[in-house]
Amino acid sequence: MKITKICCIGAGYVGGPTMAVIAQKCPHIQVTVVDLNEQRIADWNDPNPENIPVYEPGLSEIVAEARGRNLFFSTDVDKAIDDAQMIFISVNTPTKTYGKGKGMAADLKYIELCARQIARVAKQNKIVVEKSTLPVRTAEAIKSILDNTGNGVQFQILSNPEFLAEGTAVTDLLNPDRILIGGDTTPDGEEAINALVDVYANWVSKEKILTTNVWSSELSKLTANAFLAQRISSINAMSELCEKTGADVNEVARAIGMDSRIGPKFLKASVGFGGSCFQKDILNLVYIAKSYGLNEVADYWEQVIIMNDHQKRRFSNKIVQTLYNTVADKKITFLGWAFKKDTNDTRESAAIYVADDLINEQANISVYDPKVSENKMLNDLNYLETRANEENVKALNVFDNAYEACKDAHAIAILTEWDEFTTYDWKKIYDSMHKPAFVFDGRNILNAKELESIGFVYNGIGS
Image 1 (spheres, rainbow, N blue to C red):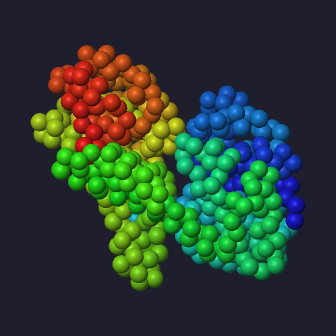
Image 2: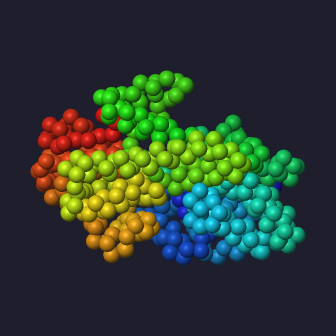
Image 3: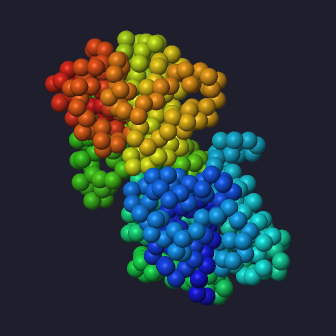
């Protein structure tokens, strides 16, 4: 089957960039991204590239090139489903906040709604592609819904998990380590797999396109994220030991990273990992293991999350202890709120939890982040339901200038590794602060010796 029309349900951090790159690389394929959120679709269609809802380096240029040619953003979900031969499901799969599996299992209600809508609308055979991160055997549930509520239409379900890192998503899409496609081992399943392989083969060499059965593909995504998160928690666990023993975690990481069996990536000690995937996917893995009675397996992976939560609490505790065991009415400036640099995504960002801890201690939090809005920050704090919105509004002051944010601060905490923070005039910042002036570098990006020579009391992670 030659694919000429693709629809993607979900215009978020995965759906938008993925479909933009497919449209750019496959001008012969019409790509329509649909979402029920009218504002989000309006933002994707905004002619000002600064206003598209996902910030990723290089993305706005790709969207501008393909939009209106063969890339379209729409709220007409039914029409896009009806027209398309291949439908990507790229909707949110948050951790359940209710019922069985609360706090661990993936909430599949949006996935099921998509499946039911596709079943209702489809009049011809369709290939349905799972792009969202899903628990293993979700394809079975989707197929059951499609086969039993459809109009006699034949559906093939493929798993095609994304392996994007936010901040480098465009580079990851243009030059992926691998593309993973899982499907049925039947002749119809093989045909569907090959149809998707042919789409990616427009710019990805076939050696990098792996095909598996659908269950292996679904589990590979969870496993990849679990392994990456495990590395971060492992180095963070060592960072605490380094602080107690006089070792330097950066030197330890460099030494072990030169071992070819280990490698240097994801060994950067920090205030902890965030983002939409790592925590959610590991909790999902824990839940799946427990549901099969594999308690030791579940406990092993759950420890990765426990260590990450501990690292965030440890960071906020260190700020309080260093500032003479009280931050009440003190101005603490956060540089960065996004969970990592080069993205405006704040999901599970360490900054949220550190701010929440310090507000509990009656600190006044000032924040500067080059890409995150004040509204987003307040929503993040309100989502925790620790206190009323009015209290968060009172405790949080957001600035669009880093120097203003730092003025009259008792301490500065680096929560995101934005490159620009390393280029600031730190002498100017020091002169504007209360003394002693403290810096808590949660990302180990600043030059400790340089800051100490200016007069700062510098605290990094793991040294």
